Image (cartoon, one colour):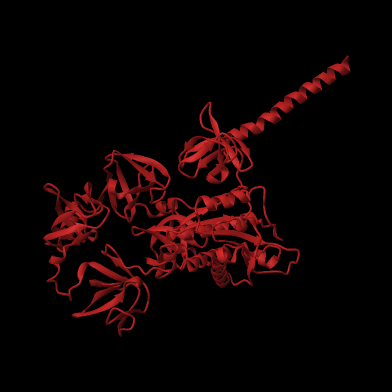
Length: 597
């Protein structure tokens, strides 16, 4: 009898344990979610393209995962309805279990300080992108994000990239404690409710809000954003919703001091900005009282410190930024060409910049200028500016080697990025999830290296204006069919699959570019391979035929890149560095530009 009781007790315990063991995973699955990546994504009644469509879902919507089957995911549409979507058209997110997705490098809430004289401020993360200004030594800017060896910042109203080697990242909170309210200004909130953000961008996370008429201390100003501090909160707000006053002097003093630079500028002009704010005073601290659209004609009543007092609409008056107003040409025909426009200036960003006697590099050099020097612009002549050198002398300077102020459409010399713009490109980080790919001598996983390199390529292509997509953006398993399907769905003009190699012979090294169809893929393979070798400096193993699924089944020009051998201890240590991945991504970017060129 005792044995029977013990046996029954053990069986009962096992039943209870099996119940918890089986129910636990389903709870975790229910907590998995997906975000829809495309508009109008078909939801089907089965896991395959042959099943009928039962619903359509919008981009950005989030759904709970019910079940997974091969390349398909069953999502919960409502309490009584569910359906299947293709896993390559959604982003999967686990909310219960910890994710093995590589962390995105960011330092939101931080500022960046320049450590170099004349640090170039570029339009994208790489030396192939054009210089849009100079981030002077000692100056600070808002930290937005990092991509390899480059940091994206917001500085002087512009967004761009600087090399991380020449800047120092500081935490905002510590800066606030040390600097206090060093600007000597305070402000008043003009909006009914104003969001305070961690960074100087609408993408910055909200840390709190302020009510109308709340008073704040001004830490510093950066473009159209203001860093503020109150007793309970600190962060960034947009200047359109803040009236800024100096704590040391009243607004009357400010008005009188600037009146010396005011001048009558009666005439008319046309708005060049898409939407231009009209304010109640001639500065960014003025409250917004209206807005006017591109092409609107206005009467110029007064000019003060680069701002115009205008008349518009039915007897409306206000102030607008003068650099967004194009004066009627009739007003300037009688202007002395030796007198520069006081609003428009060029600032030298390179030592030894040539100033010439005419609008081409074949004209003689009449002067060499150095970093920091400024000259008034007389007129624009093609891609050159005619500038005032003083003493009734004038010269010409190339518009793409200077920084400008007060110019609505500055000259930019397009680099290789011009050939990338609007091109649809799919980047395929090899392996992922349960498929780790090759494992290096020191333990580096191929799937992690391919993803980090692919993200750098993505950032460069995105900055150049490409329509770029990744087959995976986290540590997720994606089938070969899904990778090719992404290329076909996006109608890609180029497909780049990124890998790292391995072999039993640990002395083998170098990069290899594989292609399948010489007519379809050959040109892309040649361009990318040439630029990749230039940047990485590794042994060139050349372009080779490769019978790989992502190449063979792909309708788009496609290549598969092996960016070094993880089986070679020395090469593994090299390719695992951010410096190497930066150079490799630059080579891929340059190769694509040469291909499309």
